[in-house]
Image (cartoon, rainbow, N blue to C red; front, side, top):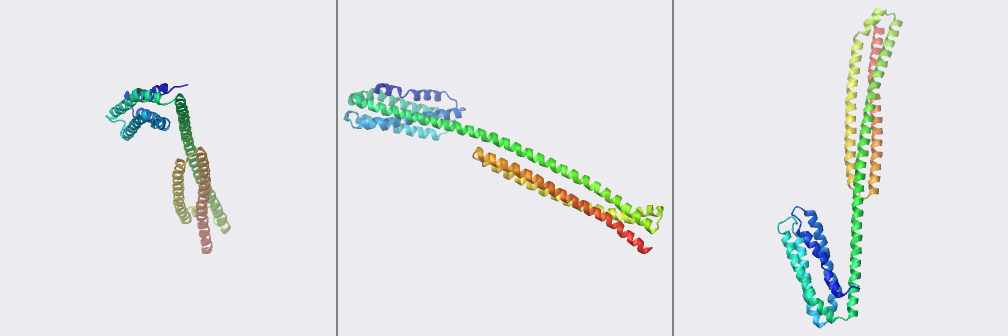
Length: 338
């Protein structure tokens, strides 16, 4: 079993190692200094707490060791004050190593005092049973502290893994959304090309129907082929084409405004989506938001295609009606004149 002598002699080992490693760091190694200082602060605070909780109360009860306990408590307070001062100062500053050296000096003096004065007094004042009881309490507390540190380190590693997974999921979500946007854009472009082809095909069919109607009307009224050819190049065709062009121009303006509204809505949805992704705090939230965004983008694409198709058909119908109505009006005028 560990003795009081072994306990007091072994306690400073880890702190001395951390002091040595900190003293060798450069001003540019801020992260390394921060990590080592955090470990040193934890070690020194643990040593002080163990003494104050389990050793000093017993020493205060003994007259020969009461004053030594008070001196040791004073050293612990000085150590804590230096730790707080160093923690608040920049670790890349020129005086950081000097502050560490000052803290090291105070700690090593405290250790020397314990070995030369406190340890002999403790061994003389305490019985073997009292010494064993103190050692058991200190070792149990050390084991408890080490277990808490391991649990905390494991928790930090788990959080780091979760952050990496969330970052990866966010990247995948962003790629999925970008792919959905590209697919939606390609789908919309296809809708526009289809609508344009429908316009061309529909107008061609309407024009052919109008010509056939004009030809039939002319023959019913007794016009010759030459008269029909002249009629085909008459003002009714010019006026019909002009009005059809006007209808198409207005229709294309409506189509452009519709596309602008769709693009603005999609941009706003993308901004809101990335904001929702940034607010996710768990993998489950990230997956749920990602799924919702993809679904909304697909619904937007389908709705945009439907609206563009309806608008394109309306433009085609209006142009076709213009081309059809004008020849009919002109034919009726010719018939009345005849």
